[in-house]
Image 1 (cartoon, helix red, strand yellow):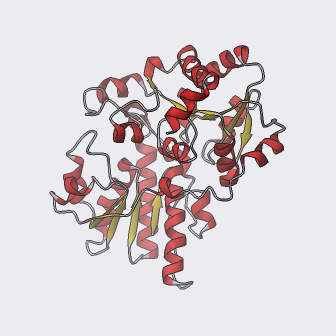
Image 2: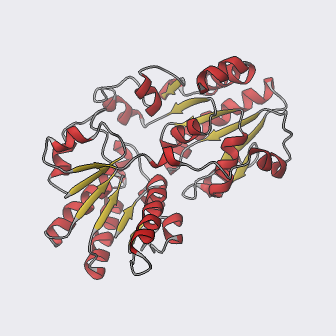
Length: 346
């Protein structure tokens, strides 16, 4: 049983299902919760995971009853299907509640968590909570293990799937041809996130930035690879000023075609970095969530490669700084300065 509640988890779950099928043969059967990518691998979800794509304390409180109903649906699926093992992928709040209820349902059922909560950045007490809830942790960072093993949770480093993206068949020129964008025209890659709350909060300032940039760079082309969970919302809000592409091929082609990216903080920033594209990172949370997290987060950076470098390799414009003029200013610097782009990529 594979359980994922967001687009990035759906991607990881699909990759895990493919790898397990290669290892175990066609006799392995999958059940669980996921999105379109996991469905393509045979995981038929009992509900649409877009309703679980929630970020923020207030949003979480408002959605609590809905989320708990989906937790019970997930546990009911396990009770019916009786899986041999359950893998709970990322999505801390949802998967923790599923784990705790599955533990009560069947104390002997092996529970594996895939992707650790970022206790190195905030709320270290979650390590102890997780250790009491699951049997094993598969981590995507080499530095995760000590935090969880100190609480008695066996941990295996399995690598970050964002670092294994295969760009060998990606073709930026193909995308430009399909969109009618000449090779010498600057192309801005806009990545507003994969959660509905990110689209509602982050896409508007990104749109403001694009409007400012197009006034100063009239030939600028813009492309948005839309995650399945938010594709319709992106089309409704950005269809008039950006080319919208869907699917993995479109996303990878767009990353290879881009001159500069304007990216929502998250897994996608690592993917864009792997594609060798300079970027500006923006993010907005609800005001209450941001006010609380400011006192909890122990790192000045939110982007993984900035955390690794202990430096702002890419500028991060967060909360009030994530506004059209500020974002446009940072993107314009990179559009206009090939040497600045080269230094960031390096």
